[in-house]
Amino acid sequence: MTDLMSKIVSLAKRRGFIYPSSEIYGGFGSGYDFGPLGVEMKNNIKRAWWDEMTKNHENIVGLDAAILMSPRVWQASGHLTAGFADELVECKSCHKRFKADEIQHPRLNSLTSGVCPECGGQLTEPRKFNLMMRTFVGPVEDEAAITYLRAETCQGIFMNYENVLNSMRLKIPFGIAQIGKAFRNEITTKNFIFRIREFEQMEMEWFCHPKDAKKYFEFWKKERLNWFINLGIKKENLRLREVPKEERPHYAVETVDIEYKFPFGWGELEAINNRGDFDLSNHSKYSGKDLRYFDEKTKERYFPYIIETSGGIERSFLAFLCNAYQEIKGGRTKTTKPTKEIEILLKLDKRIAPIKVAVLPLVRNKPKIVKKAKEVYQLLKPHFVCQYDELGSIGRRYRRQDEIGTIYCLTIDFESLKEDDLTIRDRDTMAQERVKIKDLIKVLKEKMEN
Ligand code: ATP
Image (cartoon, rainbow, N blue to C red; front, side, top):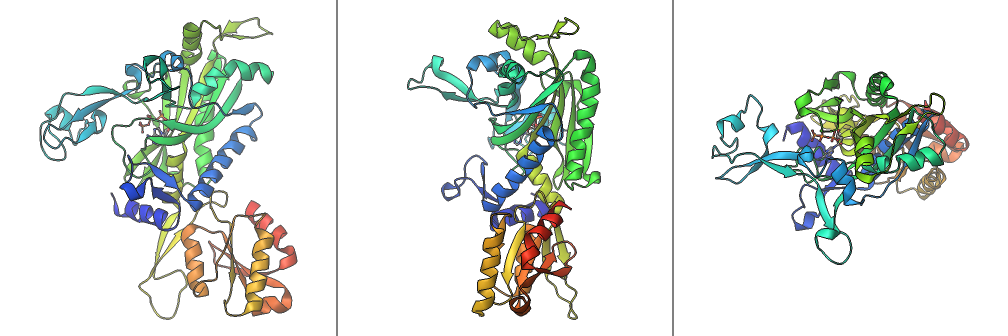
């Protein structure tokens, strides 16, 4: 793991963003749990995406389909066959397993030479390994009871395409957006939360006339790239990659990946796929139900093409963390004495930061100041995600808040008792201004929206 990644992983655990799953039992299959700050931040990412899809576009509606579906869904979708399998190779000496395409890289070239990149032992021939996670429904664990944890959320959307179309009286083009868990029995998990076996996807399926598919593919590519940029991801760390035919998922006519430059290299954040009519035509064939769309005006009956935007929440989360992480050598406040200290600043976008406001009494041994600070905390709590902190020097508390990306620190001091006001310190500029407590909610709301 790179030095920067180790620092981010350690910060994430230390400050309550992300913990290893089942840690007291030695961890579990590179699963991760989101702590108090992690869940706030994750919810903020989901909220930003949901609002973008369902509020900023006129004709996108939401859905929350069940994770467990009929296994026939997965037969029709092609996920039970070779289409959704990775190639696995194993070292005969150290028994390490690798995804064949990972070690096919020209620099490593282990696959063609048949040599293990870890220990130099001999590799087995690649064999197909299906990524679907199996489970049983009902009390008897026989073949008939087998079903699967969904490997992509979009199948729930295709299952409800007709329900949504009819109940919401929609006309093509329109979109259905969904956020939810997906599961893949990945051969290897790595790079913290980048590749895990249980993750969350935010997917939007855009149903359109086949002749418009190209136009909308271009449209969504730009929209999605801009979403990340608008939320503060640096442009130079984002790129679009046209995925060549041999690498594309089995259902895709065209794929472009939005990639982010993680500390360990470029990695896929989100895929934009033109799925053609693969899904609706296959589900029609397998279910016997005609899922073609009927255009009342033109009297045309056709399978809509689907343009999909498919992003992983954990990967976005990791990109936001990496993008925001800054180390300031010598500290942020220039003192007369040079200091060797390194301060961490998490410069997250206001919408993504988990804690919006911290309430800090200047000192904790003056009951009147503490009382006032607690009153301010109670006042703000219903409006903003807040923290109250009275431990340690004020400078130290500012640093603790900077490290988790808190946007504003409010300090209640001696003057506050006389003036009924406090100081607001801005995370990014460190500028401080005094504000009357009676105006506080209004001022903070304006600042947050700015
Ligand atoms: P990769 O090539 O990295 O395995 P993929 O091409 O299989 O990814 P898609 O099927 O396009 O991924 O899934 C859409 C999105 O879901 C990805 O862009 C990613 O953000 C997320 N995702 C997929 N697999 C995982 C995983 N194992 N862990 C975390 N996120 C994932």
